[in-house]
Structures are given as structure tokens and as C-alpha cells.
Image: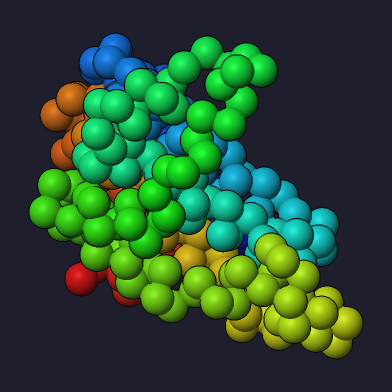
Length: 207
């Protein structure tokens, strides 16, 4: 587990250079997508930190938040209408505090990016949801998974799988950010990153 955590942290560090470049376009769509992807990466950092100190229930809950943030990030870039983008990107005030009410569910967001976003992103988000959604929702909402695991202890295999799944979302975040930089050197480096960390990524990343 210690080795997996160390390697997972190194994977996150690979994204620092990409993040430092920023998006190559200053449109609301790109900026919003970039910020949401950065939030997903923050959740991954926090998940690892919580795992390290043994707060596993909270850590597993963050996997769901990481998925939600990345899904919205990809949707903002590829699937959201201009009207929806403008609505989300308003300045925050009392009048706009509920601006994201009525936005599509994550299921609808994935449907709306299908055929527009890179096929890898649509496939990974769809399969990730199918595999992890029910259990991760249980941790977020204090369901039976959270209660039983927290009370009886977490199998090492489960914790390792959570980290690997989070790493898979981190890798997809790297691809998404690299695309938004428009930098071919960064895009070409994605293959190196994926190959370097192959042993801590889910099979979803290599289909």
C-alpha cells in the first residue's frame, strides 16, 4: 500500500507541468472546464492524503466527487450549450447562487459528450460510472458500505482498488488538460506518463 501511495503521488506530480501551462484559449468554456478539472485533481490529492492517515471512509467518498468534477469538466468543454456555459460562468452573487440548478445529471452529461468528446473520455466515464457508482454513492450518503466497512475495517484489496480507480481518473484528467493546452509536446508526453504508471492504472485506461 505504501508503494502504491508513493507511485500515485508521483503520477499526480506529473500533472504539475501541464497545469502550469494553462489552457490555450480564454473562452468561458475552456476556463470553466480547466477549473473543474483542477478541482477533480484536488480531490485526488485529498483522497491520497486521507488514505495516508487512515481516514479511509472520507477518502473513498472523494472518489465520487473526483468523478463528478471530471465529468462536468469534460461536459463543459464538449457537451454544454453556450447558454449553459454562460449560466455556470456568471459571477457568484446572491442572485446567481443557484445558477447550476437544473443542469443535466452526470448521466445526461455523458450522453451529451458522446460523439463530441474523445471516445476514450466517453468510454472511461461511462464504464467508471457503471463499475463504481452504487458503492461510491453509499460512502457519500452514509449507506451500508460506509457503515459496515468503517465498523469492521477495510480490506487492503479494496483500498488499493480505490487508489487505482482514482489514478485512472487522474490519467484521464491529464489527457483532458493536455488537450486544452494545445501543446503538442505535452500531448505526446501523455503516452510516456501512461506507460510509466501502467502498473497503478486500471485496465480502463488501456482499452
